[in-house]
Image (cartoon, rainbow, N blue to C red; front, side):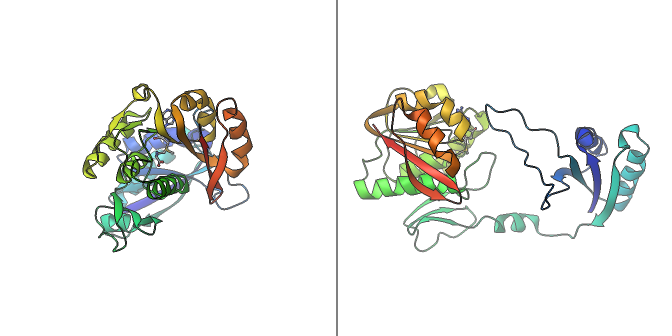
Length: 298
Ligand SMILES: C[S@@+](CC[C@H](N)C(=O)[O-])C[C@H]1O[C@@H](n2cnc3c(N)ncnc32)[C@H](O)[C@@H]1O
């Protein structure tokens, strides 16, 4: 295969991506041409914040073609277009054939949550020490155990389940369930009545499939499915939506129950504490790589 790379200004990213689609490129990717330099730009969106822009000030677009001839033809056609003004061709490189499935799989190793609780991709043997495990492959929804926020929630679940017995988690709500990893983790530590909800229907479907694959029973659905009070409310989202959701999440915590929040950066601790103060008193319970876990008990 052959990889054609272009440099273009932000305003041309979408037009060029569409042009590559029309030219039947096998894939198109866009990166910050100034990545790893002082000019690197952060580009992300968070619910409740303005939408991210289409590309970076100077974007590098890479398109994959099956033959050298197709890549050369794409260059010829693009250079003849008005919209190519301000863009330049960086080059065409040969992409070595690889075992892509094996390469992708090799990036997802088993993840240790506690010495005897592991997240293990289905193609891996279970580690000998894994007395409890969640079988999960990378998919459409967030949550494979590789992110610190997910790991901290799972560590909290494991500690609660081990120190206080199988019934400690009680009725569980996983709000923003993604792959369903936290809800499945709660089931592995004894929770029997679990609601897992997400605004993204693809996440709801992924949660159902992952629960099935792990032999776990839970109710997955859209947020309105969360009803009543729960002994454990877990929400790994991000600071801005967590602040908006404060009254709703707190109302779901039963008397004596726990609220467990993740997706919060260390510097956001105080604003979260303030946002939840009318209902519950949040404390920092764990931290990893600049992220914190905040918990409260009613
Ligand atoms: C960071 S992922 C966490 C996934 C998983 N619970 C974990 O811990 O790895 C956040 C999830 O929250 C969902 N989400 C974002 N805002 C939400 C909202 N207002 N209500 C419900 N779900 C939401 C997203 O669709 C996403 O699947």
